[in-house]
Length: 443
Image (cartoon, rainbow, N blue to C red; front, top):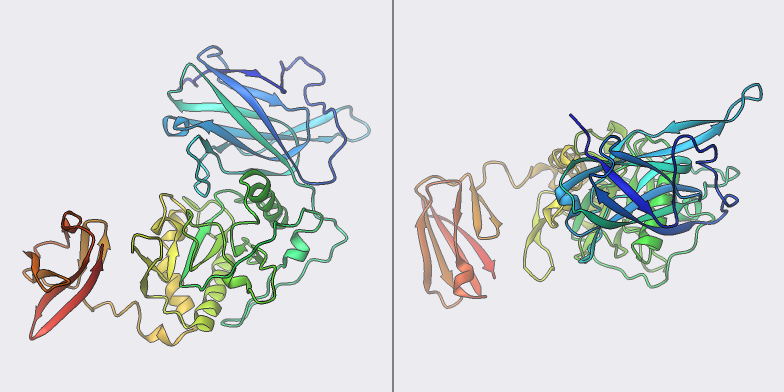
């Protein structure tokens, strides 16, 4: 299949032919502190149809990159990137060797909300890069548009620092890689931490980093991206878990009275109150997390559930202004428009509830008992589990007036209560043998 062609007119960049002997030269010494550069490029459609890609050299060192596309472009077309790094050949040979990273498809960063652009996830290379290749893989694009390239250089952690050794044991507080270690040499976060009581443990994935074993460098890059690009006070998550099972302390509590597990984060689409965010490092849409990483997640959440007496099988109202229900253990996608934490991690959340729940008195309850009748709200849709077909459903308003009645003939029904206005309603199901199931509804 023929690739789509795109040509780049660059400002502040160097777009070169392969014949240029100094294509990957830089005009600076390697930075010693974290730095973010913003460069804008114009993309013109169908001018260079033979190649379909452009190799771009910013003439600056970088080891992470993100892009800001005009709103909607990433919904219509697919792009990919390869980062290029270099190393000098042995003394008996001349020049440098060029090494390309694995090609990665660009995806929108679902943690950042913007009305003016779509920002991609951060793409990290555990090397000093000098150029990158940008491709359009599919889709339709406007005749011309401007893209802002966000280039980060995050200096590596000094090799002289001794890395803390993480230990693991069932339900005890897990060992953490502290901020004092992984943030060494980086700017401090902006002060102003606040605490929140945790009702929900929200699981995320970083959407990048599979196969990269430089976990500390990844966390440093995420921190720089969150603070210097997204403009947040600190890294968004309370904790991050690497593929080797290491657990990193995320957002800095700052104050002695605030604990790591209840510092208010920035990870749940501006609905962070009463949540604790845990990020699994990697992209888990098609790839499963490692067993040791999952073991660390079990331990971290088991300790948290035990400490705060939380039932992992419960669903509670989240204070987002809409009265929406959210699981005590939930995925990012349960409350936000996102695919996070990836299909493979999301499919494991039931086992997370079971394993973490072994640290609590609720382990014998097993998900509010599989045989009990339950009701789950999904907008105007209502799902029923273990409720016999033919059961009569009645809904009363706060004054006891019957406002809706229906015989349940399927697992889901639509109940347009929003047409009745905001109010408090009571759903009553007659289960037979004198049993009734009552559920309060707040609209």
